[in-house]
Image 1 (cartoon, rainbow, N blue to C red):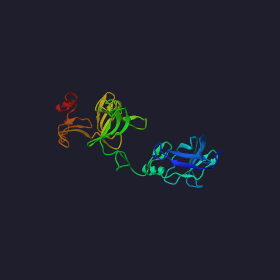
Image 2 (image 1 turned 135 degrees about the horizontal axis):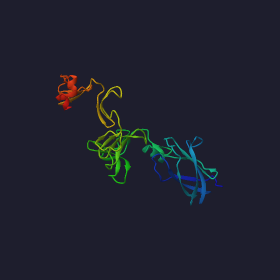
Image 3 (image 1 turned 90 degrees about the vertical axis):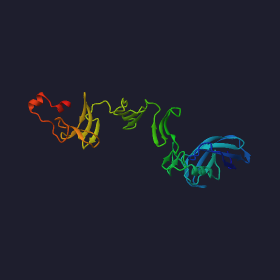
Amino acid sequence: MMNRTMLGIVLATVLASFVYAQPFTYQGMLKQNGSPVTDTLSMTFTLYDALDGGNQIGLPITQDVPVENGLFTVTLDFGNVWNGADRYLEITVGSTVLSPRVKINPVPYASFAQRPWQKNGSTIFYADGQVGIGTSNPSGLVSLGGSEGNKLVVWDGGGPLDVMGLGMAPGQFRFYVPHPGNRFSFLNAPNGTEIMTILGSGNVGIGTSSPFAPLSLGGGNANTKLALWQGNTAADVMGFGIAPHQFRIHLHHPGNRFSFLNAPAGDELVTIRGMGEGASLNPSIDAPSHNNQQENSSPSRTQALL
């Protein structure tokens, strides 16, 4: 059995990232009765918050450790346990607990102070401030610096031009896809229905993922496809719609009118009333009045022009 003799532990090179102080590598010297040990020994490493007694932190780690001429090296990962408080490592060789415990300081906590990411299972996080990538003075929770070009690549096809992501140019914020046939898609849920599409060619589709025109409102029949004015209900709109074999321009009330003006907010030249009675060349003049015989046999010139 290993006697409780001298164990020298020296903090050595960190072999893995210390972003969240895990994992880290220890190198030690193990002697028995003054002579270096050469053997493979079962060692258990347990972390505490005090030199004596105290509380155990995390779970113990047991490894079969090769020892050559007294030297051994182990890699330890206790999980998300580095919060700035003191930590002490207790080492058990076989059934022999070596003492005193070794204080883990200052290297892991120096790294913790410089790189304050923490680990929770397979997740790393930082909740104490703003993060800068490409800048030392981030102005938001995450800042990607002030340079132009690709800023965030969401999909990488293998080259600087074969990407989907976000970028910057002078005075311009960019969303980009690498091919005109690719598209930006707006879905109603993750893996849900595609409700709006912008092709890489510039065509926009609402209700279709394959727009053939600069603006396509989908292929289904709908009484309202484009509302230019919306009241309080679905029927209370002015706009455009589709019915089977029919293109519709609609008002929401017979008293409304379609007006043709010579300029924005200009003179109303031609009016079509919502009641469908015809048109006048001036909104102050009523539609031409005809008796029943005239209406049935010979429409007015104004009506004929419609």
